[in-house]
Length: 238
Image 1 (cartoon, rainbow, N blue to C red):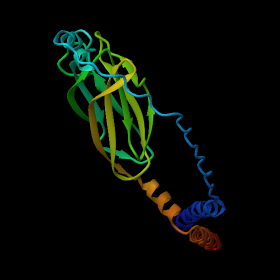
Image 2 (image 1 turned 30 degrees about the vertical axis):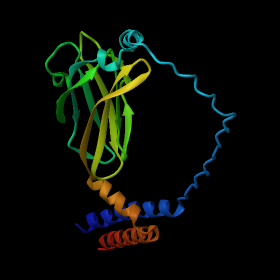
Image 3 (image 1 turned 180 degrees about the vertical axis):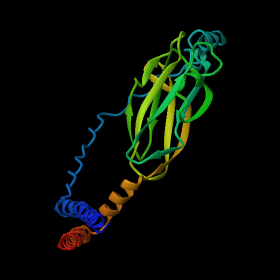
Image 4 (image 1 turned 60 degrees about the horizontal axis):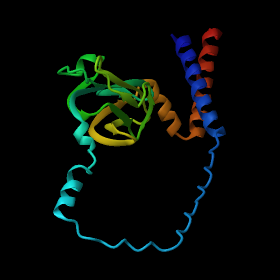
């Protein structure tokens, strides 16, 4: 039993000494100062507005009907949408967020989701194309599908992201959906999810070691190694 404890002390001491040594030898890179660019000055004054003339009732009627461009809302239709986000996650471990938009005429879009997290369903006004963006202040987000997709009439469209939390505690993810009108994006729906980020046992130990004084960690590791070595020496001496 004494030998086992001694070996464990040596292993723990090696780990602590390594963390302390790396922290002492680490250097901090200074960021380069931002380069500011001044905007070019505008030249000349604005031309005077053209003289106004009164419109007759007939010309006003023609302008208000035939010349008015159709808005994006005139071309949108309401379709079911659903997305899935986990309630809990572990810092440093990736998870997936999935969005589905079903323009096939189905009553729900949740049927195509994996079903491994918290599913929220709803509806949104969309056109021929839709764009979805996922954002979060304390997350590393990697898109696994195109942001902009042409909506299919034969199968539900899905968007997927691989997400890794970088901070513990409750963190917000925001999912924005846009209907596309030519080159313009019209916001049509937004989801805000709160994910509770936990820290694993190994992560807690590493985090505590990183937050501690590097010299103290190094000395603690050396002391643990010496204590383990002394225990092994006593064991073999008997």
